[in-house]
Length: 213
Image (cartoon, rainbow, N blue to C red; front, side, top):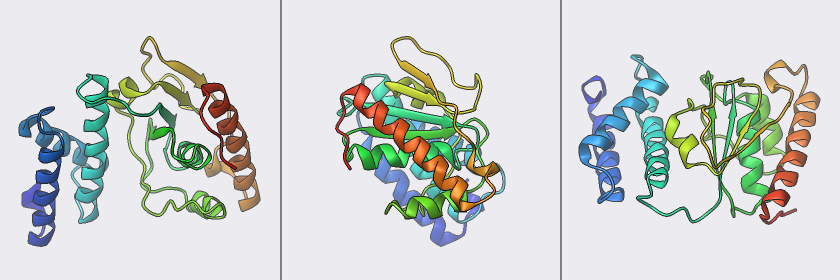
């Protein structure tokens, strides 16, 4: 991977790698961390590695490693974990994840993923979420991986069929929600946002989590 990068980006990648080695010391070896980093680059960027893909890949690898550590009991889960899965991870699941963080006041940890992720988050979704003060400028679509499912307490699917593996002891729900990618106007995307927002608040209440605002 690093040989394909310019020198400045390569040094940044090396610093990020050392940060992950320090963070997960005692849980995972350097070899495991390097494998997750390389795998995350492949999942996000394939062979078309660009300057931004490595940085996003490290964010993705860190989340995967943390989920794996939680699933294997190497680190304790301090919060309830909710996972949202849709097809592209560019609209519905991004909205739902951000709304859980907003409505729970950060009391619930949330992840999102896609069975066939897009390249970028839907700009109309970014716009309507910004109307609630939610900044999705750094959000990016991520593929569904096994460890994030294993780490979740609650898994919510939205239009991705049977792409999500089933593990015992978890709460599964399937939400039938319109896809912002098929909306014809911002008002339709806002209506989808409101639908998801109501579902999120109902879910939080059912889980005994705080509901803010």
